[in-house]
Length: 250
Ligand code: ADP
Ligand code: MG
Image (cartoon, rainbow, N blue to C red; front, side, top):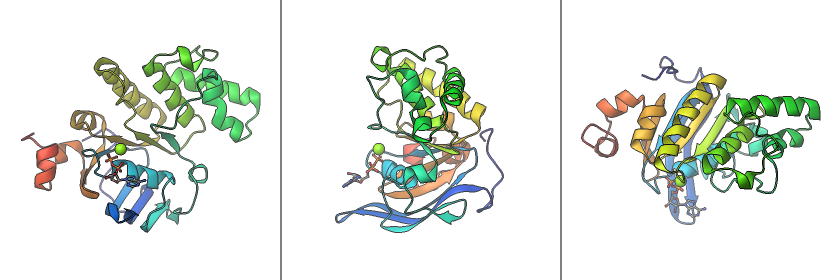
């Protein structure tokens, strides 16, 4: 059981909840009756093969996509029609790129500029956040000159700078090589512990999910087949799909 695992509860501690969400593109059903709670401070991983609906789930949580049916409740309030900004959550998505011509500090501070935070306060927050992500002193460096791992750290810092309660990450390390990937996984675990922000992390990598998560939600063909702690998923898979994808027999 993960160290942030909380006792079973139905809705008391849900930060954000999807209720019976369907998402249809044309005549293709990408999500089918998905209901899931994200608890305060937890590390929840959405795990499944390519095309199983993980990114669509994240896009709905973020507010980049509107569910065709169902509701999304933030602390009990329906936010289905609220923009990502209004939901107050951070995102690290592919295609949500850094500004390559700007400095690290300008990238990380951007969400604070948008929120009209005064410069002195901004600079102090940027300094602290860069130190949290292991980039202390990198303020004036340009994005173009940084390694892939360093750019991922900048993206994390930018997503976390305004203190969101929830951070959404869509396969943030998939482009990194194996050793860098391992390093970034431990960094992410450390940052999660340090900040106490709830993380929803998407991956198709079973080992990554098993090592990082408080809970894992397993997706297959647009359906969520099981949500449980890594040990329960591994030891007591709820379906033959889950058993085949993550279970002991894999
Ligand atoms: P995953 O992230 O698990 O790989 P996705 O959520 O991206 O899966 O996609 C689930 C399914 O929905 C895929 O078959 C994908 O082709 C389809 N899909 C996703 N977004 C769109 C879209 N904007 N238009 C049409 N089909 C889409
Ligand atoms: Mg995806």
